[in-house]
Length: 226
Image 1 (cartoon, rainbow, N blue to C red):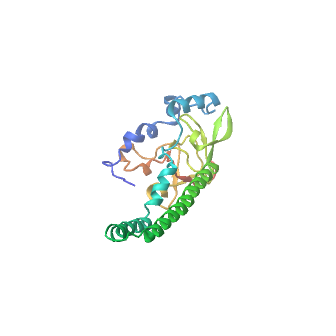
Image 2: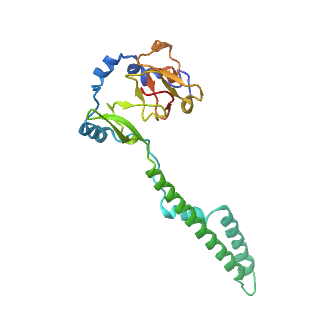
């Protein structure tokens, strides 16, 4: 994690959001403590997109096939086959294809075995990933509901409790003994206390970990419900 002001402009990233009081923050971003309605949430998802990091498109089957075909083992066999073609066919008075055929069978067998193993294991991993999609608690239509993390949107009121994964960068609006583990972000093992108001002046902030009223996506709650 880069911590210097020259590398990460903390004030530009979160200055306004962290320096505003709770009331000013709610007014500035038109946030209701009763949460969004289902329709408002859907409109904002349509406008801003899903709350997820864009990932590379899944590989096509033929990419798995060619990667298997030109694996290190097969590359060696193909190299040997080229040498045998030169010695046993091109230079020989009586061409012999026996050794080349044996190598071709080995290459085909190795390619198919690796291809089916890798292709099916990746497909299974993708399906498992879809099944274990993480959810979080937000207030919608004045009720606490569970929604997939990628459906959290701007203006949502997120309810956190011990063990919760922070689903997005959040401004703390209410808290009681709220401690967040930020080791995934800063490398520090000790939990950091979060509160409603910023404890230090913004010009004294050296890194985003100094912002005690902002919770960052990917970190997790250590303490009791807030």
